[in-house]
Image (cartoon, rainbow, N blue to C red):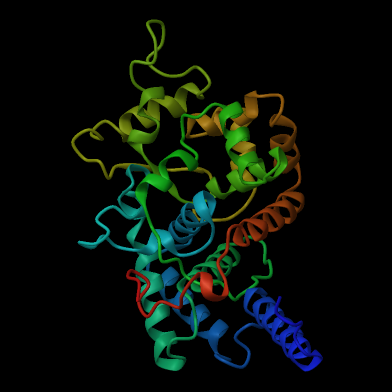
Length: 332
């Protein structure tokens, strides 16, 4: 039997283990001032890119919010949805059917911000952190709530369309399916309804709701949960959607470019665009939250801020589990 190690060796081993643990904790900790030393102008550079892009293209806020959700919700906020196809990975998340319509303005914003940051602080800022920060800035810019963004994420090496399809909400899902899906990611019914309030900005392509406005049943051409005049207007607006897949309609017809609680106020009037929007007003499990947010914008803002901050921390990668990409659309 080998003799036990001398005390100095044990002390060295303990010291190594303690230092390693501290290093891992340091690498894995997200903080509000993560770039204060390594890239002190991080926030200003992102803000400048956001402002320039949103002024030029007012749909950028909704576009970026959607890309952020599609990145974070399936497998964590790791920039995996940003990767483009390559011969080695021909089917990343962006090629998933549900992601094919992700708006180009969001990707363009990230390219601009990343380029500026690489000039100022090469190899320091992750694309997933840029996306999280830009999303918060844009939500605030269009009238929504401010919330702190914790930083220090790393970018994923992996991106597969097959890992996304089962885990993103669809516009035709039942409320029960939505509740189960959000619960699988650790979100309550209240948090789900708050996050769905992101539909207060942006638009949806007609194919997402066409089943509810054309040949719905033998007795009605449209879903009776629609306001009749709204349904008829949608039928006219989407008349050419089969020939032109880009035809779309604002999610919130009352204030489409403003982040407010009118989305919830629209639902009792039959003005919810998507089937899932109208369903959360009808279902008794979600209706109380819809009514609460319709009556109190401050409460909606408070709950949305808490829910999206929670989402921004879901499934993050830190330390050696990820990388700092040189380009957001390609692994190093």
